[in-house]
Length: 421
Image (tube, rainbow, N blue to C red; front, side, top):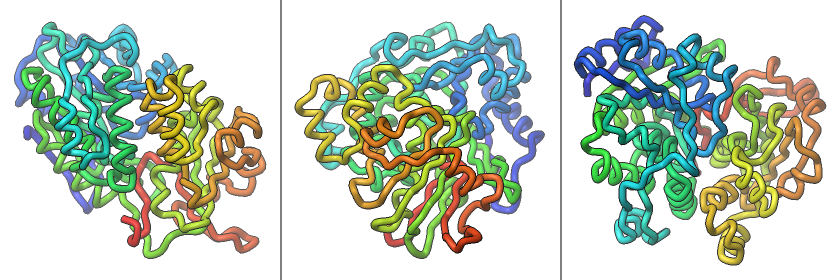
């Protein structure tokens, strides 16, 4: 590992973040052509926007392309690029297409996948990534990302940034379905998972000779509610990820003494425009909710189900009706069986009947929400009752006596009662 800095006593300043990245790049040595792979707007508060600018400042002549790790998400708009990355030249930015931009490198054998998943699935997983990632024209790949609890891989960051963020449709489909079949509650907040093992296998087998440097942040909310860096870990192997995951476990988890009967989650419309993204509100809180509890999702910017048109259609058709119903549909309907990431998403987004979910989107009708398997409430009325600007993070009591637990951004952590984690 080239550089690390983390603290439990204070946040890292902008200057220290810049100095740390520049010191690591100095240690890497001179490079002629650098590809930067940062997250997209869905990780607006990851610190990656500033780090991308610092990397460009260090050697603007060498940074020749910036390829946001979109995964299945829609390409960033010019406005989103400006918001996250400032005034970096727009000609540097390219959009990854998970359906058309990838080159096949090989596959992870079925027997290995079966072994690491404990028999949850037993299919081979292809390894295909954006062709720029493996192009010999680049002598350094800077993979920038945030390590935070994640529903598919356990923690985001490291290999996930490449094999999902720059992955192909089948690669994403099968890795997501692997996570869903193994069990989200067995994965979230754990550094060693079947999905992580698959990523590590692919890195070692197919990308060992690629000059990748990982730049990983761990963010935490300060007293004013802003996300600020607690740690910065930079290296060319898994060690930096393990350090970051350990810190994330310390600062991004909220362990509760008992389950909660009501949780209200707010989805910032700048970041959350679909159920595909907004369902983090379900993933990250499900282990905190009591049986027969209620999750209320305030989603003023959500106007569609999927980021991708085909995924959107599949979500509308099959809905979030629990694992048995989804697996039955996978078996009966080729269109869902060929889109296993959509099937995984439907499983992840269901409460399995254990707790209720009230969704309050800004641009989807009552009927559409109910057909998808959720309860509906009008967002304007619910925002008046649960005003995000007046609620505090954590426990709140409204004037009429209603008790609730408020989360202003579900992507920032994981919440669980001690008896469920």
